[in-house]
View 1 (cartoon, rainbow, N blue to C red):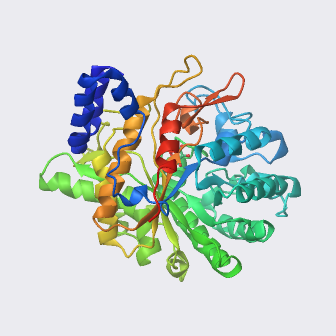
View 2: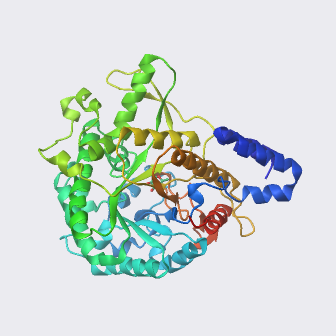
View 3: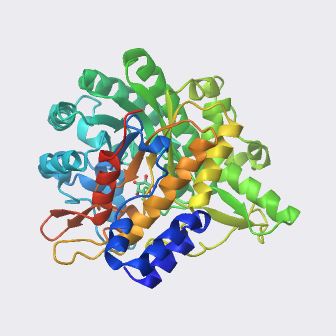
Length: 484
Ligand code: FCB
């Protein structure tokens, strides 16, 4: 821990300078004390986030960790990885973290961290055959995992779709094909019956924005389609699938907490000019509100009326009632913010700026204040159910050295964001839990294995797991919580 590091922390914790001032003071007053301070999170002692009934978990997703592709059907990410130039390190999900074979060890590490909950996703192509039947071998893996989690009193938060669409469905149009929504509903029906009473919470989808916009509108994620006409259509079918699945969950699984996970990248205006402010609002409607408004208010944001007809989704009568039915919880994923100004090109709504500094290793600006702003704003805009922060975390350039990873930068990121979350709770936002992304390093989509988000380091040469300093800090925070 260097003085420079402390200064860097000050930069990323602009709004929390009292905390960082302390830290720098301590640096001057003794290295040991300094070290110990940097290895824990500094939440106010009376914070709700320090109470036992605030749930803490870790999160992963099937394609990013499971490996063992030979025992499931191909999915769109297998195909995307096999397409040259799509993945930064030309890697794929064939082995990933070999979690299918090492899950017992992974659950034991979760137990050591003392987490209350584990959020993971089910691989649709592992559990459903091509003709739409249950694949019992695939299901057996999840049943054992669920039983073990329950035995260890780790609550299973199951995400039903974290981007790994079966390739045979993509071959028929994927999320551009309305039938896929009905196939998703059938998959959910079968899996809910198979999982029985083992699950604590179901999320229908993880981040529809990423599947629809990144996957079908700009093509940087699978299936790699890139057309403005596709993005909105895919989003609508995904939201419809969410609603159809909610029907099933509410009827067949009324005792689980059922909802959806959305990601938000709050939009800030580059200047106070009217043109920049309007562009920023349109960006927010297009990338954020598009995915939450239909669920909360049964309608798309006003920007829909500005789209050319060819780019509008095919909305059938009754769709928005299906999409907008009540959810038990809203999962919120937050990593960064973005800055916008008026468009420079015809036909565009906004210009998106490069990320400002400081940044994480993946190039995303570190801006914890945006996390507070986001939650407070959502709470004003909508009548929200309880919120769970289902993902938050940072890629850092970790080094495994003498069996340790001294990721003080990640600790600082978590510290600042937990404090930002505390601020939102103080301002009246109802947040019941928080999941760190990620439990362990894994396949970071188009970035491959180079970007590491884990609390646990994975050495991909030998699949050895090492708890990072951030993992120990998380463990300490969780262990030191107090009863109400
Ligand atoms: C989110 C994804 C998750 C992970 C993090 C870094 O958008 O849901 O799988 O890749 O970003």
